[in-house]
Image (cartoon, rainbow, N blue to C red; front, side):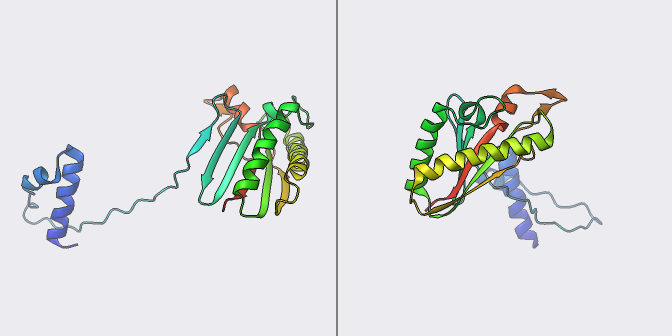
Amino acid sequence: MSRSRSAVLVTALSAAVLGLPPAAAAATPVPSPPPGVSGTVEDLVLPVEDIIGEVESLDGTESQSRRGTEVTVALTSDVLFAVDKWVLTAEARRRLQQVAGKVRAEAAGGVVRIEGHTDDQGADAYNRTLSQRRAQAVEQAMRTLLGDAGVTLQARGYGESRPKLPNLIDGKPVADNRAKNRRVEIVFDAR
């Protein structure tokens, strides 16, 4: 990096750190390195993480996020099913009608994934089976609601293997996080 380029970089960084406008930082002299000291100035290269916004209902039972064209609608299992059951409640059918309307209006076609998830309570095998049955119950309801919407539905249960939030913090259970981890996600590509 040339000396003038590094001076510009130091000026810009100084302005940012001190909260000064760039012109004020430019008036600040750039110190010269002490005699006999040499080194190279490296460019800073930092990773950029995807920022994924999530919109959550006021009661916390539904959320929606988007990553590129992929849309994920998550419904907590507490609104879809009774405890340890996989039969949909009447409220679940109403919510799934809304999600089906969204899929019909926004999906680009192709595969719509229905993914069941549980919290960390209970045995892994039990949770995988429960989440699979719940995903299949949602798949069956969505198949009826979507009719010939031009999508293929695929159901899969993940058990507790993909928590949305940590079930435990500092070794203590977090009830709100566990409730959000008990969910079914409907994932599709938007137009």
